[in-house]
Length: 328
View 1 (cartoon, rainbow, N blue to C red):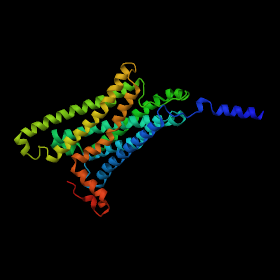
View 2 (view 1 turned 30 degrees about the vertical axis):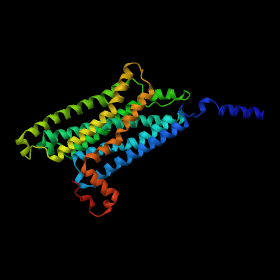
View 3 (view 1 turned 120 degrees about the vertical axis):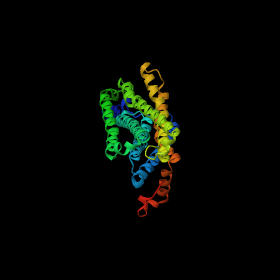
View 4 (view 1 turned 90 degrees about the vertical axis):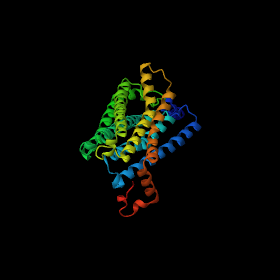
Protein backbone atom coordinates (compact mmCIF):
# COMPACT_ATOMS: atom_id res chain seq x y z
CA UNK A 1 0.00 0.00 0.00
CA UNK A 2 2.72 2.45 0.93
CA UNK A 3 4.80 2.10 -2.28
CA UNK A 4 1.65 2.48 -4.35
CA UNK A 5 0.77 5.64 -2.42
CA UNK A 6 4.22 7.11 -3.05
CA UNK A 7 3.90 6.33 -6.76
CA UNK A 8 0.58 8.16 -6.96
CA UNK A 9 2.07 11.18 -5.23
CA UNK A 10 4.96 11.18 -7.67
CA UNK A 11 2.59 11.02 -10.62
CA UNK A 12 0.60 13.94 -9.21
CA UNK A 13 3.66 16.09 -8.71
CA UNK A 14 5.04 15.52 -12.18
CA UNK A 15 1.89 16.00 -14.19
CA UNK A 16 2.69 18.31 -17.16
CA UNK A 17 0.30 21.04 -16.13
CA UNK A 18 2.23 21.57 -12.87
CA UNK A 19 5.57 22.12 -14.60
CA UNK A 20 7.12 25.58 -14.85
CA UNK A 21 8.83 24.88 -18.15
CA UNK A 22 11.55 27.08 -19.56
CA UNK A 23 10.63 28.72 -22.84
CA UNK A 24 11.91 27.45 -26.17
CA UNK A 25 14.83 29.86 -25.96
CA UNK A 26 18.13 28.34 -24.91
CA UNK A 27 19.58 29.15 -21.53
CA UNK A 28 22.38 31.17 -23.17
CA UNK A 29 19.92 33.28 -25.13
CA UNK A 30 17.90 33.90 -21.99
CA UNK A 31 21.00 35.05 -20.12
CA UNK A 32 21.98 37.39 -22.97
CA UNK A 33 18.46 38.80 -23.07
CA UNK A 34 18.52 39.43 -19.33
CA UNK A 35 21.90 41.17 -19.53
CA UNK A 36 20.83 43.32 -22.49
CA UNK A 37 17.47 44.31 -21.05
CA UNK A 38 18.97 44.81 -17.60
CA UNK A 39 21.49 47.27 -19.06
CA UNK A 40 18.79 49.01 -21.07
CA UNK A 41 16.58 49.25 -17.98
CA UNK A 42 19.40 50.83 -15.95
CA UNK A 43 20.14 53.36 -18.70
CA UNK A 44 16.47 54.31 -19.02
CA UNK A 45 15.95 54.61 -15.28
CA UNK A 46 19.14 56.59 -14.58
CA UNK A 47 18.79 58.91 -17.58
CA UNK A 48 15.22 59.88 -16.84
CA UNK A 49 15.90 60.10 -13.10
CA UNK A 50 18.50 62.77 -13.88
CA UNK A 51 15.97 64.67 -15.99
CA UNK A 52 13.38 64.50 -13.20
CA UNK A 53 15.89 65.54 -10.53
CA UNK A 54 17.14 68.48 -12.62
CA UNK A 55 13.69 69.91 -13.27
CA UNK A 56 12.46 69.41 -9.71
CA UNK A 57 15.58 70.74 -7.97
CA UNK A 58 16.61 73.81 -9.96
CA UNK A 59 14.10 76.65 -9.64
CA UNK A 60 15.06 78.16 -12.98
CA UNK A 61 13.63 75.07 -14.66
CA UNK A 62 10.20 75.43 -13.05
CA UNK A 63 8.35 76.34 -16.25
CA UNK A 64 5.20 74.91 -17.89
CA UNK A 65 7.21 73.32 -20.70
CA UNK A 66 9.62 71.65 -18.30
CA UNK A 67 6.77 70.34 -16.13
CA UNK A 68 5.43 68.57 -19.22
CA UNK A 69 8.93 67.23 -19.92
CA UNK A 70 9.02 66.06 -16.29
CA UNK A 71 5.76 64.15 -16.78
CA UNK A 72 7.16 62.55 -19.94
CA UNK A 73 10.35 61.57 -18.08
CA UNK A 74 8.29 59.90 -15.33
CA UNK A 75 6.53 57.77 -17.96
CA UNK A 76 9.87 56.83 -19.54
CA UNK A 77 11.39 56.00 -16.15
CA UNK A 78 8.51 53.64 -15.32
CA UNK A 79 9.02 51.88 -18.66
CA UNK A 80 12.58 51.06 -17.64
CA UNK A 81 11.73 50.28 -14.03
CA UNK A 82 8.55 48.20 -14.48
CA UNK A 83 7.70 47.23 -18.08
CA UNK A 84 11.12 46.02 -19.23
CA UNK A 85 11.88 43.77 -16.21
CA UNK A 86 8.41 42.21 -16.36
CA UNK A 87 8.72 41.69 -20.13
CA UNK A 88 12.09 40.00 -19.68
CA UNK A 89 10.68 37.58 -17.11
CA UNK A 90 7.72 36.85 -19.38
CA UNK A 91 10.07 36.17 -22.30
CA UNK A 92 12.19 33.55 -20.51
CA UNK A 93 9.48 31.54 -18.76
CA UNK A 94 6.24 29.91 -19.80
CA UNK A 95 4.93 29.02 -16.34
CA UNK A 96 1.47 30.58 -16.17
CA UNK A 97 1.48 30.39 -12.35
CA UNK A 98 4.31 32.95 -12.51
CA UNK A 99 3.37 34.96 -15.61
CA UNK A 100 -0.40 35.23 -15.15
CA UNK A 101 -0.34 38.21 -12.81
CA UNK A 102 2.76 39.72 -14.43
CA UNK A 103 1.10 39.54 -17.83
CA UNK A 104 -1.83 41.61 -16.60
CA UNK A 105 0.39 44.10 -14.80
CA UNK A 106 2.73 44.46 -17.79
CA UNK A 107 -0.21 44.96 -20.14
CA UNK A 108 -1.77 47.70 -18.01
CA UNK A 109 1.51 49.58 -17.50
CA UNK A 110 2.52 49.17 -21.13
CA UNK A 111 -0.67 50.77 -22.42
CA UNK A 112 -0.72 53.37 -19.64
CA UNK A 113 2.83 54.58 -20.23
CA UNK A 114 2.76 54.49 -24.03
CA UNK A 115 -0.50 56.45 -24.17
CA UNK A 116 0.67 58.82 -21.45
CA UNK A 117 3.86 59.54 -23.39
CA UNK A 118 2.08 60.48 -26.58
CA UNK A 119 -0.47 62.62 -24.70
CA UNK A 120 2.38 64.42 -22.94
CA UNK A 121 3.99 65.01 -26.33
CA UNK A 122 0.66 66.24 -27.64
CA UNK A 123 0.40 68.80 -24.82
CA UNK A 124 4.05 69.79 -25.32
CA UNK A 125 3.23 70.59 -28.95
CA UNK A 126 0.32 72.74 -27.74
CA UNK A 127 2.71 74.57 -25.41
CA UNK A 128 5.12 75.17 -28.31
CA UNK A 129 2.22 76.40 -30.47
CA UNK A 130 1.45 79.20 -28.02
CA UNK A 131 5.14 80.09 -27.66
CA UNK A 132 5.64 80.46 -31.41
CA UNK A 133 2.24 81.37 -32.81
CA UNK A 134 0.66 83.28 -29.93
CA UNK A 135 3.52 84.53 -27.73
CA UNK A 136 1.55 87.42 -26.21
CA UNK A 137 -1.11 85.03 -24.92
CA UNK A 138 1.34 82.39 -23.72
CA UNK A 139 1.56 83.47 -20.07
CA UNK A 140 -2.21 83.68 -19.81
CA UNK A 141 -3.05 80.45 -21.62
CA UNK A 142 -0.20 78.24 -20.34
CA UNK A 143 -0.19 78.94 -16.62
CA UNK A 144 0.45 76.49 -13.75
CA UNK A 145 -3.23 75.53 -13.50
CA UNK A 146 -3.56 74.69 -17.20
CA UNK A 147 -0.29 72.74 -17.16
CA UNK A 148 -1.47 70.76 -14.13
CA UNK A 149 -4.72 69.87 -15.91
CA UNK A 150 -2.77 68.73 -18.97
CA UNK A 151 -0.54 66.47 -16.89
CA UNK A 152 -3.55 65.07 -15.02
CA UNK A 153 -5.35 64.28 -18.28
CA UNK A 154 -2.23 62.67 -19.75
CA UNK A 155 -2.21 60.16 -16.87
CA UNK A 156 -5.87 59.66 -15.96
CA UNK A 157 -7.13 58.96 -19.49
CA UNK A 158 -4.46 56.29 -20.23
CA UNK A 159 -5.09 54.71 -16.81
CA UNK A 160 -8.80 54.37 -17.57
CA UNK A 161 -8.11 52.96 -21.04
CA UNK A 162 -5.49 50.52 -19.74
CA UNK A 163 -7.71 49.21 -16.96
CA UNK A 164 -10.64 48.89 -19.36
CA UNK A 165 -8.63 46.80 -21.80
CA UNK A 166 -7.23 44.70 -18.94
CA UNK A 167 -10.69 43.95 -17.58
CA UNK A 168 -11.95 43.13 -21.06
CA UNK A 169 -9.20 40.53 -21.51
CA UNK A 170 -9.57 39.08 -18.01
CA UNK A 171 -11.90 36.25 -19.04
CA UNK A 172 -9.67 35.35 -21.96
CA UNK A 173 -6.62 35.15 -19.71
CA UNK A 174 -8.51 32.96 -17.23
CA UNK A 175 -9.25 30.53 -20.05
CA UNK A 176 -5.60 30.59 -21.11
CA UNK A 177 -4.43 29.88 -17.58
CA UNK A 178 -5.92 26.38 -17.82
CA UNK A 179 -3.79 25.56 -20.88
CA UNK A 180 -0.38 23.91 -20.74
CA UNK A 181 2.66 26.14 -21.38
CA UNK A 182 0.53 29.24 -21.94
CA UNK A 183 2.69 32.31 -22.52
CA UNK A 184 1.96 35.99 -22.34
CA UNK A 185 2.43 37.58 -25.78
CA UNK A 186 4.15 40.95 -26.05
CA UNK A 187 1.12 42.13 -28.03
CA UNK A 188 -2.55 41.26 -27.65
CA UNK A 189 -4.63 39.81 -30.49
CA UNK A 190 -7.95 41.31 -29.44
CA UNK A 191 -10.71 43.13 -31.24
CA UNK A 192 -9.91 46.25 -29.29
CA UNK A 193 -6.29 46.37 -30.50
CA UNK A 194 -7.10 48.34 -33.64
CA UNK A 195 -9.45 50.72 -31.83
CA UNK A 196 -6.89 51.41 -29.10
CA UNK A 197 -4.17 51.98 -31.71
CA UNK A 198 -6.32 54.56 -33.51
CA UNK A 199 -7.32 56.57 -30.45
CA UNK A 200 -4.12 56.12 -28.41
CA UNK A 201 -1.57 56.62 -31.19
CA UNK A 202 -2.77 57.56 -34.68
CA UNK A 203 -5.09 60.44 -33.79
CA UNK A 204 -2.68 62.07 -31.27
CA UNK A 205 0.17 61.63 -33.76
CA UNK A 206 -1.85 63.39 -36.45
CA UNK A 207 -2.63 66.23 -34.02
CA UNK A 208 1.04 66.56 -33.07
CA UNK A 209 2.24 66.61 -36.68
CA UNK A 210 -0.42 69.15 -37.64
CA UNK A 211 0.56 71.48 -34.79
CA UNK A 212 4.26 71.27 -35.59
CA UNK A 213 3.52 71.90 -39.27
CA UNK A 214 1.75 75.11 -38.21
CA UNK A 215 4.65 76.01 -35.90
CA UNK A 216 7.15 75.47 -38.71
CA UNK A 217 5.16 77.73 -41.03
CA UNK A 218 4.91 80.53 -38.48
CA UNK A 219 8.57 80.21 -37.48
CA UNK A 220 9.68 80.59 -41.10
CA UNK A 221 7.39 83.59 -41.48
CA UNK A 222 8.89 85.20 -38.37
CA UNK A 223 12.42 84.53 -39.60
CA UNK A 224 11.71 86.27 -42.90
CA UNK A 225 10.00 89.25 -41.31
CA UNK A 226 12.43 91.92 -40.13
CA UNK A 227 9.71 93.70 -38.22
CA UNK A 228 8.66 90.58 -36.34
CA UNK A 229 12.28 89.80 -35.48
CA UNK A 230 12.87 93.30 -34.14
CA UNK A 231 9.75 93.28 -32.00
CA UNK A 232 10.59 91.60 -28.70
CA UNK A 233 6.96 90.99 -27.78
CA UNK A 234 5.99 89.16 -30.95
CA UNK A 235 9.16 87.35 -31.87
CA UNK A 236 10.36 84.02 -30.62
CA UNK A 237 13.58 84.29 -28.64
CA UNK A 238 16.66 82.27 -29.52
CA UNK A 239 16.19 80.11 -26.42
CA UNK A 240 12.55 79.36 -27.22
CA UNK A 241 13.41 78.65 -30.84
CA UNK A 242 16.04 76.12 -29.76
CA UNK A 243 13.62 74.56 -27.26
CA UNK A 244 11.01 74.19 -29.99
CA UNK A 245 13.49 72.46 -32.29
CA UNK A 246 14.63 70.17 -29.48
CA UNK A 247 11.10 69.12 -28.57
CA UNK A 248 10.33 68.59 -32.26
CA UNK A 249 13.28 66.17 -32.31
CA UNK A 250 11.86 64.40 -29.23
CA UNK A 251 8.51 64.02 -30.99
CA UNK A 252 10.25 62.79 -34.15
CA UNK A 253 12.25 60.19 -32.22
CA UNK A 254 9.09 58.96 -30.49
CA UNK A 255 7.25 58.57 -33.81
CA UNK A 256 10.22 56.83 -35.45
CA UNK A 257 10.41 54.32 -32.58
CA UNK A 258 6.71 53.57 -32.19
CA UNK A 259 5.19 54.00 -35.68
CA UNK A 260 6.63 50.71 -37.06
CA UNK A 261 5.05 48.73 -34.22
CA UNK A 262 1.61 50.34 -34.52
CA UNK A 263 1.63 49.98 -38.29
CA UNK A 264 2.58 46.32 -37.88
CA UNK A 265 -0.15 45.46 -35.38
CA UNK A 266 -2.65 47.31 -37.57
CA UNK A 267 -1.60 45.24 -40.57
CA UNK A 268 -1.49 42.18 -38.34
CA UNK A 269 -5.10 42.70 -37.27
CA UNK A 270 -6.43 43.54 -40.74
CA UNK A 271 -4.74 40.55 -42.39
CA UNK A 272 -6.03 38.01 -39.87
CA UNK A 273 -2.84 37.89 -37.78
CA UNK A 274 -0.43 36.91 -40.54
CA UNK A 275 2.78 38.58 -39.35
CA UNK A 276 5.36 36.50 -37.45
CA UNK A 277 5.43 36.98 -33.70
CA UNK A 278 9.23 37.54 -33.47
CA UNK A 279 8.96 40.51 -35.86
CA UNK A 280 6.21 42.11 -33.78
CA UNK A 281 8.14 41.53 -30.57
CA UNK A 282 11.27 43.10 -32.05
CA UNK A 283 9.34 46.20 -33.07
CA UNK A 284 7.83 46.38 -29.59
CA UNK A 285 11.26 46.33 -27.97
CA UNK A 286 12.37 49.02 -30.44
CA UNK A 287 9.46 51.16 -29.28
CA UNK A 288 10.37 50.70 -25.62
CA UNK A 289 13.95 51.79 -26.37
CA UNK A 290 12.59 55.27 -27.10
CA UNK A 291 12.48 55.83 -23.34
CA UNK A 292 16.29 55.75 -23.32
CA UNK A 293 16.70 58.23 -26.18
CA UNK A 294 14.88 61.24 -24.73
CA UNK A 295 17.55 62.02 -22.07
CA UNK A 296 20.18 61.66 -24.82
CA UNK A 297 18.33 64.26 -26.89
CA UNK A 298 18.10 66.61 -23.91
CA UNK A 299 21.82 66.20 -23.20
CA UNK A 300 22.72 66.87 -26.82
CA UNK A 301 20.50 69.92 -27.35
CA UNK A 302 19.85 71.45 -23.91
CA UNK A 303 22.71 73.34 -22.25
CA UNK A 304 20.67 73.54 -19.03
CA UNK A 305 20.51 69.76 -18.80
CA UNK A 306 24.27 69.42 -19.28
CA UNK A 307 24.89 72.08 -16.63
CA UNK A 308 22.45 70.43 -14.22
CA UNK A 309 24.02 67.03 -14.87
CA UNK A 310 27.49 68.34 -14.00
CA UNK A 311 26.21 69.79 -10.73
CA UNK A 312 24.40 66.57 -9.79
CA UNK A 313 27.34 64.30 -10.62
CA UNK A 314 29.88 66.57 -8.90
CA UNK A 315 27.75 66.81 -5.76
CA UNK A 316 27.32 70.59 -5.95
CA UNK A 317 23.59 70.15 -5.46
CA UNK A 318 24.25 69.48 -1.77
CA UNK A 319 25.57 72.99 -1.28
CA UNK A 320 23.37 75.68 0.19
CA UNK A 321 21.24 77.67 -2.24
CA UNK A 322 22.41 75.61 -5.23
CA UNK A 323 18.82 75.32 -6.42
CA UNK A 324 18.92 79.00 -7.41
CA UNK A 325 21.89 78.47 -9.76
CA UNK A 326 21.67 79.91 -13.26
CA UNK A 327 21.85 77.11 -15.81
CA UNK A 328 21.48 79.23 -18.94
